[in-house]
Image 1: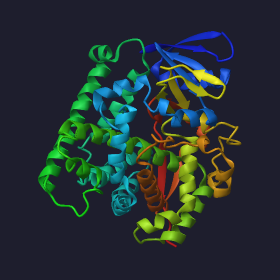
Image 2: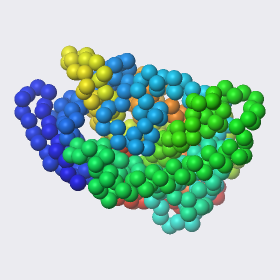
Image 3: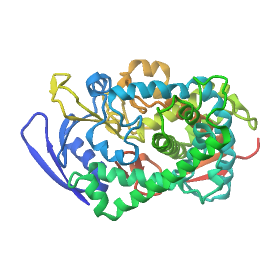
Image 4: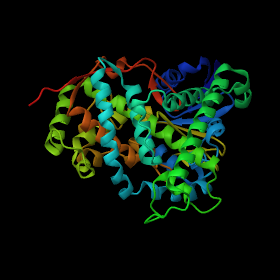
Amino acid sequence: MSYILHLQTPNTNEKNYYVLHFSDLFQAIEHISKKYGFPCNLWIGHHYHYVTADADDVRVILNSPHSLNKMSIYNIMGLLMADTLLLLPAEEWKLQRKFFSKSFSQPILNSFVEVFYKKTSSLLNIIKEAEEVDVFDVFEQYTIDAFCETIIGLDYDMQNNPQIKIAEWLGDIQTISGKYMVSGLLHPDMMIILTAEGRKVIQRIKQTKAFIRDIIKRKRKAFGEDSEYADKNALPLLDAMLHAKEGRFNDEKINQELILFALAATDTSGYTLAYVFTLLGMHPDIQEKVYDEVISVVGRDRPIYNEDLPNLKYVERCILESMRILPVTPFIGRMAMADLTVGSKIIPKGTNLFVSMFDLHRNEKYWPEPLIYNPDRFLPEEVAKRDPYAFIPFSAGPRNCIGKTYAMMLMKTVVASVIRNYKVFSNYQSVTELKFSSCITMKTRHHLDCRFKPRSPP
């Protein structure tokens, strides 16, 4: 499938047209940015985008009340989750966000750490049995397994039940939907009808929704809609929706919200973990510093508790540096609902605002030697010197990621559990060897294989 990409640079009248295949989108934008720099004006089909990788621009775009709505190319996701937290218009989103925030309160998240750790037992066994693993696959399966027991409250033991294909279905939905998001040649509905991939994504949506319907049914049966809770203002996500005031969440809306959160859990946390272990495998000296900290804080064989996580400071810096150099979400898109002043420029109403997180996180203005993996960039004294909008792994401003603390707590638990038991070796020596294909999330075009070797007893 091809589409037309038309560029006009901001300071000249020069125009360039590119006819590209979807798999080239990531490389095309990187090529354009290297040739013309940022910001630039970009057309994908008939959609106009203002593209930037400057922290001052990002601060305005992510905080202005006139750019809280998602940009137009996200509309294809409406087939799956039209009325969810991701896509709701700003005024409706504010009410929904306030409701969901209670389910991500610190006491609830603290209670999840026991599950995060328990689920690493299956993960460690899978690693033990495999000579080499595609880290995308194993951590995607881990994160959806942990998601089901924490956010949903049901244990499907998915890591040990490969017949449950929900992670695969979600992956297909994300990949195929991403293609339609950037295709501008046909109306999405028409493309869905006419293409084999369109029919495939419809089938995956049906399968996923059927699985979620079964979850809702099981949950209602297990707990009952009239169950009493000590504090109905602080419930895990699915419980909160089931016990909301009558009419707020019907089963279809619950279904859509759970799919949204499942996609976010598997992509953001799962893919980030894949990149964290790949980078640690490339840098054995840094990996050993992680190991030393984990042993110092947690010990060699006791469970990992919630109270341990704040003390895993070097682990956290390694995760943050991974999210800088290999951001899972390479782009953020908003819509200008009114004329927007960005620096000396006035961006007209109706413009799609395209923040290139990938380029922002590698911008030499903020990150000297950006391709070097250096966790000490996130020492407190280094962070204090830097524009806070130079690093936005969970977006920023009022519409940032609601699950960012959940994700960090899960990832710190996993990194600590795996590294104290295994040394990891990457099949790659440098991030420059990795080749990406991306729209919604950034994934390598190839397998991302690592080898895990048990650590010798002390």
